[in-house]
Image (cartoon, rainbow, N blue to C red; front, side):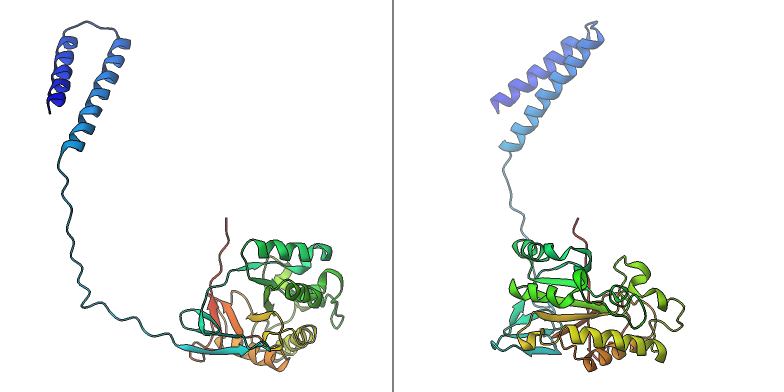
Amino acid sequence: MTLLMMILCSVMKYAKVKKHENVKKSNKVKIMKFLSTLLFLVFCLTGFTLPLHAQELTIDLRHVPVPAAPVSLPMQATNPSRETLSVNSQYFERNGKPWFPLMGEMHYNRVPPDAWERSIQEMKSAGLSIIATYVFWNEHEPEKGVWDWKGNRDLRLFIELCKKNNMLVWLRIGPWSHGEQLNGGFPEWMEKMKGKRTNDPAYLAEATKLFNQIGDQTKDLYFKDGGPIIGAQLENEYASGQPEHISMLKKIALSANIHPVYWSVTANTVFDENKLSVIPLQGAYPY
């Protein structure tokens, strides 16, 4: 306290003397800086010398609501190694325990095939365990009835490389994909078709052909077969339209031998919420 009193007296004396002096503007600035420094020291010393009192808080936990128990969803599978995957209303499960995998995007058609494996390994080394990829319709049927699954469109080879490097796969099968692809992934010859992205019979007939092609390309590559494919996303950003359309697409995909563990839609998609047939997932861009 003696030191504090000495500092305060010095400040007051210095200020009183300078008050009556005719000083230049530059000296006034120096004086203000000097006084500010002394006041800061006074503040710090005062703060450290004051006794500290702990704040007491009371938390009443007697009326905290009990969280609802997780509800199992009808999506589960076991692979030949007896490893199981499932999901409930709160989290994914691996062998009956909570599982929080990290998933990243890689669109095989946009990467040279000779760079696929290196890119897969880089994603794995970054801590990812699942690779999501679009199957863009207009990449594989540029002309009606003409299908192309070669070169940078070789979906099967890409998935086999994921399996080789112990990376899981989440297919985004559309039929409409977006993904900054021309026409959202629809072939050019479909642009004049009415009833797209609905249960219109003509549209569903073409979508069925696409799903049959995907089913052929991915045969025996699903988790239940010992393969890496664990999920399939239907449509994309289907924020308005027919909720039953999503259920119809899933039915068609199953008939085409597309059998993942998990079925998903983007979180802004409309679907039949009472059936619990798809999981609305929210993705985000890392910046």
